[in-house]
Image (cartoon, rainbow, N blue to C red; front, side):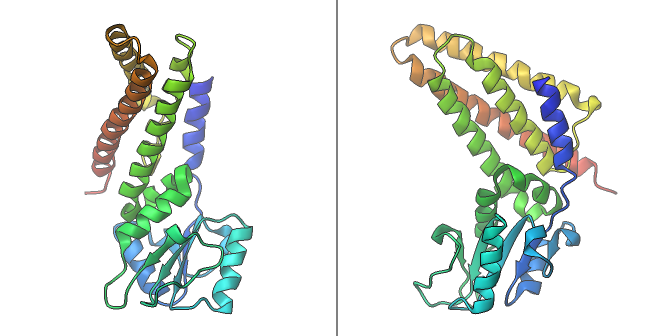
Length: 256
């Protein structure tokens, strides 16, 4: 039932059509760059911030009243915000935006799309998968964030769960959730024809546990560290393999 629930969740996630909203000076130009190779409908430069998956606000120096008003609306609606500061002036605070989510864009340097993608991936978390499917410029950053996040979670769980065997269902479901999210990030729908991929995830979980048991026999004193490291490394390896696989599937599905 848990596996079935994750499959339904992954299918429902692909139906989320909320766009990325880009506003402020040079918003049209940035929106075009973000939409390269993807769906232009996934990036908008107008509309209600409450209906957006995330807000990218372009600033030209000290935030204006209009800037503050839109940022406040996004904050109240719990819409993730990333600001792009095009002024070279240092130390300008942006209300409602964490300092780590303010991307510097010095005049004449072009938009730092990689930094922007990393910031959006970090703020969006798992909800960034649908945007990644529609906007390839975000895909690598979102996949990196997903793999690191799930690997870290499983590493902690591997250390925290002491009852023998109790960790496997939790770790395996997290790994399956990761694989399904990576599929969504590439616009690949997992249905009955892809059941073998689901079974492979669970099978990989058994393999990683077997490795952990063998290592525990060799180094029993530091067993907690071995379990955590194996859970982290196994989840990361599985995620990287799934990312490469779905990248090929997505490429093959493109029209000739």
